[in-house]
Image 1 (tube, helix red, strand yellow):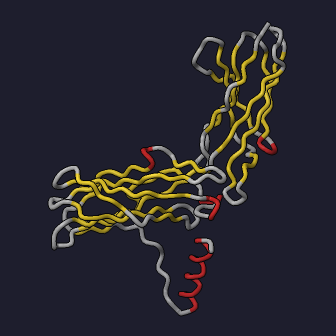
Image 2 (cartoon, one colour):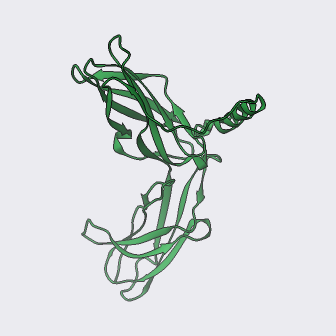
Image 3 (tube, rainbow, N blue to C red):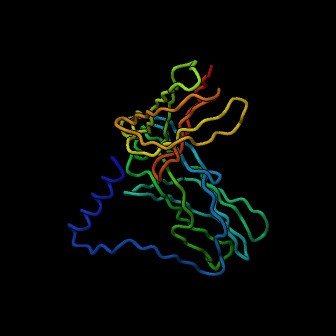
Length: 254
């Protein structure tokens, strides 16, 4: 059963029983001098998930206490009831007071670990227990944040090849992104995409113009042939969708 369905069913059962449902809290709690000093998700990079690929990544929480760190729990929460948990978090001490506690997370869209409307900004909730008998701890919601994004693809084709100097080159392509529910890539329309050019012998692309993807993610524009070089499309991405650049298509100008 989907997470969303389970959550709604639980809410309905509480309501039927006459329970008072309080709004979700976003308050931190602590006891003692335990502190969270750093949270790193996927090495600081966005978590990008394809249509059918299994994505594994690590979340690390660094914490301190004058008696040292004993253990930690890490959960991840996203839009529309998105939730990811891990059964095992391992804490490694850097010194007597500081440890980094890390957990491995797995996202498999084939089994609905995530669905399309759960892409976007996610948050890290962390509970850290200190060593000793006084039960020092810290509980911090939104201790860190990251982007969980649908993977995207771009194609490009510049024609004709070769072309005479001063003639028109037509550059076509398509922007698509992963649909986690269908297991396929689908066209993404209405997005700003840059057409870029790299002169032969250069290592740097420069932007020629910006166009918008149309129905089915289609891209099409024209430029005037001047010198040999390579064209590509480049997409900056949005909160829910990863950035991507097409593999360039070289054109000889005669």
